Structure formats: structure tokens, C-alpha cells
Length: 308
Image (cartoon, rainbow, N blue to C red):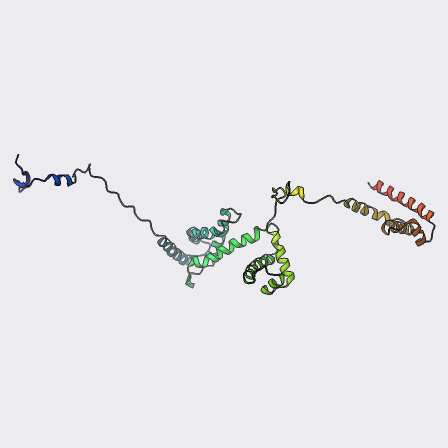
């Protein structure tokens, strides 16, 4: 075989021989194989995801169309209910976005989203598309306000009036501003002047903060609180409690005594006078006072025993 290769082409049904120069060794080395099985597959570039801005634009455009349709149908009809439910489902991401701001609270996120959905429904019912305001701009304050109202009404351990709750929030904000301005904690008088309220209201508002959270009686104490749960460290045995019970039981019995005997009892046990001083006060002898005291005390003791 010669140094030149012969290739055959089919041209007009006739085989025509062409002489082609033989490839050099270098060209053979650089030549890529033409076998499709030996050719490596080229990676297919992934399709880019739709931009978030485009999705938001589609949601706003669809919401705008649904609101225009909602305004034309009869309230309470099946079509009205369908369009309204579609708007609610379409704008639920707005509720989840607003609820995420409160994830640090001690409430399940599902409950916060549910409360925010109530605010979304209220916003849908009040929204007027002819005002030229986008629905997310209109609905966000309503959704956030509904969630804040939920925390204000349910997160307090002790129910306090809303006026005091709002006063506490105002005091917290004013306290932070005055602390930065004065470089110290503000006084009650300074807080009162800043908010335009009386000092008594400031004291009451500060005291309300103790009702926001409550500690469990079975909570584990800290290092500085001593040993044992809180229930075992609160309160003490009041030694005077038994005396209160006795006094309350003696009141009706003392009321039944004659005036002189009742006065002797009062002077002896409440006035801390001696029998001689009582005798001089009443005008009788000390011996007579002793006999009257013995008789009266026996009568009172029998009265307490019979009631028991």
C-alpha cells in the first residue's frame, strides 16, 4: 500500500477515487475519536430557577386580578367564597413571613401562623383595590397587629388591664431612651415627665411587669436561692394564727358577759393591768376581782369547749 490513502466517494452513482495525504503520527495522536460510544457525554447545564422577584410579581398580579373579581361578585355566593379562599391561600406566605418575627416567643409557630391568618382574613375583607395600594403593604400591619394583640392578651401570667399593659410598654421604651440620654437609670419623676403621666401611674406600670411571667412552685432553685423547690422555701408557720382563731371564737362569748365582768377581762388581758389596779379602777377589792376572773374564765372556757 502506497504512502497515500485512498478514499472513495459516491458521486453521481460512480465511484471516484481521491488521493488524500496520509496523516502524520502527530495528527493521529491529536485526532479525536469519531465513535459516539467513545465520545464522553457533555454535561447538560441545569435550568436556572425562577427568580423570587418574578414569583412575587406573579402573586401580586394574580391577587390584584382576584380582588377585582371579588368586588364584582355577590357577597356570600359560592363564587365569592371561592375567590376569597383563593386569596387567603395565595397570601399565606405573607403570614408566615410576619410570624417568623415572633419565633423567639414561647408559643408554637403553628398558633402564631393561625392568629396571623385571622389578620390576613380581616385585611382581605377590608382591602379596596381602587385605592392604589398593593395588598401586601396594606395587609402587613393588620397581620402583625393581630399577632401582637394575641401576645398581649394571652402571654401574661396574671390578667391586667390593657391600659396598664400599654403603659408598661411605654415605660420600657422611655426608660431605654432616658438611660441612653442620661447615662443612668431614670427616676420615677423623670419617667412621669417624659410620658406625661403621674408618678403614681409610673409606679403602677412598673409593678405590672411582675405579672408578665410566673415561676413554678416546683422549679429547681439556683445556686444563690438555697436548697429545695420554691414551694418549700416560701412562707413560714405563723405562731399568732392560732390566737386569731381563739379571738374570733371568744367574741360572741364576751358579748354575752355582764358589763362589769367584760370590763375586768378587757383590763386584765388587753390592758395588762394587775388585779389590784383593776380593783382600784372598778372600786372593788383585789380578792373580789380574783373571784370574778376565775368565775368568768371558767364560763368562757366551757363556752369554747361546748362549741368545739
